[in-house]
Image (cartoon, rainbow, N blue to C red; front, side, top):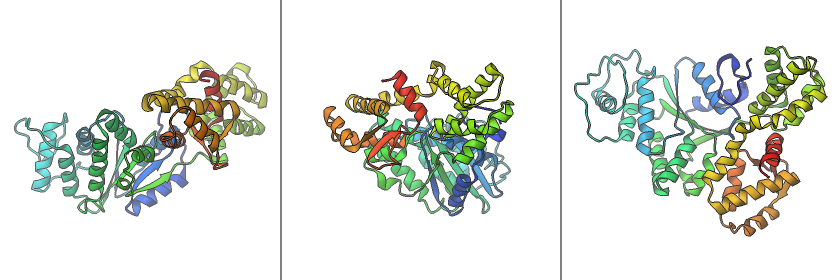
Length: 393
């Protein structure tokens, strides 16, 4: 298994997690629309890649990422293009008149090259159309012969956030309402399902809009960190690929130091362990593990963590950003903070009305957790905490 860091993986580089994957499959088989919930770098996109590459008979998975999309009609234009170009229409020789008409309209308005024998495009149509309406029509008329289509949308929450920031709260709510109406369409139900995820949490954004009622149709499945056994297996598989020897005690030390056992952190630790092994030329022991962890905080790895700081600057108003920054500084320096101190910090920064939403976003997006004690918060990752303390505080 190669050590591919910072991007989604597939094939032999993917560490399969049967429990999570089977839970997703069971939910889809039950007819649910699914939202994969987890902070960034936990492996959600890689799981989608696995599902797409290992489609069971009778199921078609289509994947699209909509991170840069910031308009409702652009969202459905992107999805329509992906569906039309997918294997869904491969082998289809005939279609209803309504389907033909919608496909012809969409193909005329999308930069797309597709060979469908039942479609004839005579002239370019420049009339304005509703991509959301035509997309819904093709899903309604699509004959899957009893099979199922799963449309996987990566960065759905980011699309919603883009619409909120670039347009308005009203437009963001309209986006959610149109999507809700789509998935509740009885002509689509039973043959088309949606699998959504993203690197930021969906509920905090929807709460800002007072629109939680618009996502109740989603079955939320959490993608947890790796278990100790899974993290150990992943680490050993990566190190074996590079012929790195490591003692059992050192493996335990690696997992203890990582603390938050997400695939990215295991891969990052493995990268530095491989480097130390090549430099030292001997079996990795506890001392060499600690040397590797010192290297993790080298500025060359900052690119993996700076995105967290950039997100706070970009998406929070100045008072909320100052509150979040000071909160993380305090946790980095004193390990934990309780709810009373958080409230006092919010009052000090004059954000007593909005700080709870900011706090919730910090939890959903993987900055902090309160699993051990509901009243006390700490960094999710000891590695991230050390980076924050070194480069931000």
